[in-house]
Image 1 (tube, rainbow, N blue to C red):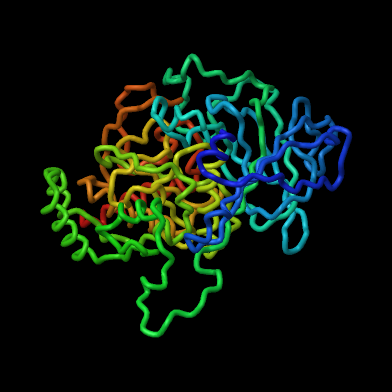
Image 2: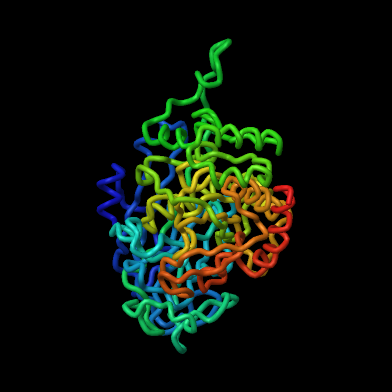
Length: 487
């Protein structure tokens, strides 16, 4: 994967600044590191680029590592150290088929105050957000196992410890829907280690998402100049992304504007008149919700050159899976684009996926963002619900909702988005549909599963996602979404 980053992206690599603040005998040896920067092409897109730094974890001595207790046998990590600024982090390992049975904890130093945080948990179950088994994306040779990313804000110091489970083999995470073992879906060739072992090649990924596009200074436009005359020219990859939404907004748009229900129905009828595939769409016409405002990839500052070119599509959208990003709730709505850029870099450069996994993202203020490239109205195949990415769309709410209640604005945004997106394909948000499993830990490959058309991630995979508190809101979201459709 590291060779891929250097060769196919055309990036520059340099050693990361890693200055241990309190070196010990166990960390006296240099820890290999790698920096992946996109500075070489950032100017062309008008965005200030970010970077990703990868630090190999080392065995930790069985001593107290700050507050929180004994590290225990077999632990790996990094002692407290100073690093170049970053805002999001996660842990990756070599084999994506191997689960991390253990706990990952980090503490970070805020750039502004130089104060260290307490220990924070990183969600370890991220293998459930991935491309379906057997697809080209999953077989690319670039994919790695990974935790969920964690947003920590502007930081310049880090300490991490990964402690393996020492009890019986780990099962489904708390709150997962149904016993995975009872479904008989686990792959017999799965090389998961026994409890007490950690996956090989553990590395800490430190992500600097870069600056928000448009924040850099620019000369004043000439009098009478049109807005499109001032916009940076689109490179080939950015133009490809914009073209996928050409029927909805201009190529340089940062937002796809909202439409009223009447306007949405008129636009939908016009698209049917030009489409040969109108049989199912005709039934959807009376039941489509008003199109919500959607911030485009250009609007949140996606660096299109790091994703794989081209798009993947399925035949239709029969269901929406709701997720939480498990990145924590310590972000402001103004920071949401930075969080998304961080997740994007982590999914592509650290986890090795072709693009960000989710089709859409929603922040705590109810703002909706375009996710995986290919067109917000199209059946773009994501990497959000392992085994059920075909004929579905993935919507991730930024944050962690295991114990924290999601905002009313976020839940409403999910309802508005699904009313429109599912309506395009004639789907009732309060209904159920059959999806065929592509393989996972809850349903065997090829099994037809009856699911809500608005489901939680845990309905298709044994996971705690989208968190107990967000999952509890899905019934309300279904009813509200159906109301927006006029049902």
